[in-house]
Image (cartoon, rainbow, N blue to C red; front, side, top):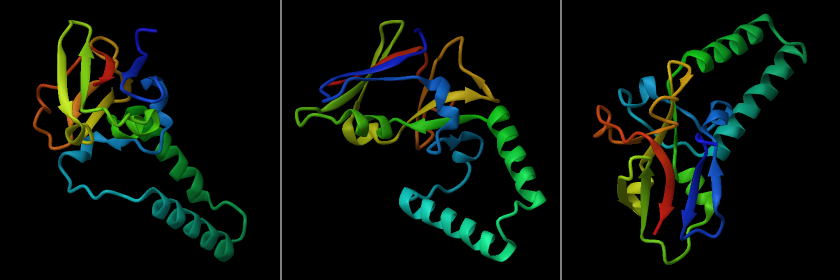
Length: 166
């Protein structure tokens, strides 16, 4: 239970986050390249449509049989998941929790009693880093709080145990 992070406060739905399952989430961010490459916000529906169109075209051109490269691609993705450094935006979870109209700030609570306050606009740029080189952040995790601009990359917020919306 120490790896579960609740979102509480001025939200319609109090939810709990389990970083252990985010490795399978399509919204994950590869942090090995995130801060070095230019980031373009992607529309999830457009991305899905492009993937499905490519898959459909591939089946029409090659038939429904799976070419040998498909296994290699899947193996590469699996290896990447087991060795990569990943994060996910907090805004996805805040959207699911549905902030109340009275919400003004997002506070990150740590096990040491420290509280880090962010405006709702700043909260959109919060990234929860949940793995380093394919391993969960057990010792001082379960997540590190990073800002999308990379300003706290060398000094992330650690020992996060709750997100409170005030």
